[in-house]
Image (cartoon, rainbow, N blue to C red; front, side, top):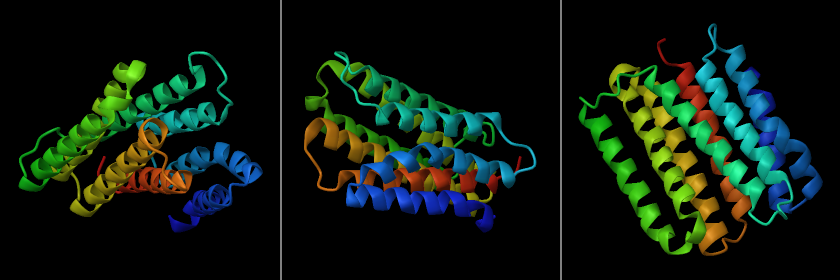
Length: 218
C-alpha cells in the first residue's frame, strides 16, 4: 500500500515545495497530476473500486484545474466552477461514506464528533458571513455540504473498524481546515504563505479520507 502511495506523496511534496518557493512552473506542472495519483493509489489497493469515491476524487481534480485558470471573467466563472466541483466532490465523499455506514450515531464518540463538526462549521459561517457579499448563497451551501461530509464520516464510527473510521475522520477535519484557510484568505484577510498551508492540509485530508475508506469493510 505504501509503495503505491509513493507517486501521490512525491508529487504532493514537489507541489508544496513549489508553493513555498512560489515557483509557478512547478506548481502548475504538478497540480493536475495530484488527484489522478491519489485515484491510482486507491484503485491499486482495492478489489472493488467505489464509483462514489472515485467521483469524489475527480471533483477535487476538476476543482484544482478550474482554480489554476486565470479568472479574468466578470462573474469569476472559473472560481464558481471550481467551487461547484469541490462541492460535488464533498457530496460524493458523503455518499461514499454513507454507503459504508448506517448514518446512525449510537456511540457517544460518533455523536460527539458530529456535534463538534457542526459547531466548527457554524463558527466558520459566523466568521465569514460579513465577507460573503454576493457569494452568500454558494458559500453557505458549501459550508453545509462540508458539514454533511464530515457527519457522514462520523457515522462510520458505529459500523466500521475504529482505526479506519478515525483515520477518515481526521481526513475530513483536515480537509475542512484547508477549505477554511482558503476561504479566510480569499474573502476576509490575507494569510502569509496561505497556499502552503491550504495545499498541505488539502492533500493530507484527501489522502487520509481515501486511506480510511480503503480499510473499511464493504
